[in-house]
Amino acid sequence: MRAIITVIGKDMVGILAKVSTICAEYDVNVVEVTQSILQDLFAMIMMVDISKASIPFSELADRLTTVGQEMGLTIHTMHEDIFNSMHHV
Image (tube, rainbow, N blue to C red):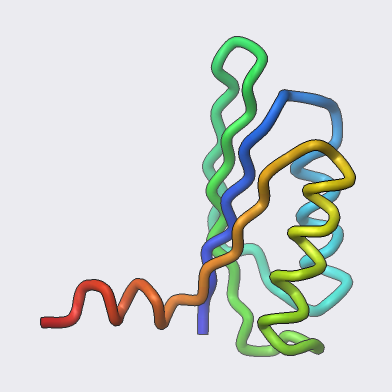
């Protein structure tokens, strides 16, 4: 199973490191990352494999949201099933 993590906010040192460290802490494998810095704004989309995660998906999402708030960022985590449901006719 996979999930998508999006991060948006003011650019600063360590955003990618912080998010990927949390993923590693809970055995979530980062599969793909794309990021852009538009002037002083940071935007990142990260695809992760959550099939071997050591915590439930909801707890991972809550942890990332909390860290985002602490850093002044918006971090949203969406399960792959949401995408599949949205695009299934």
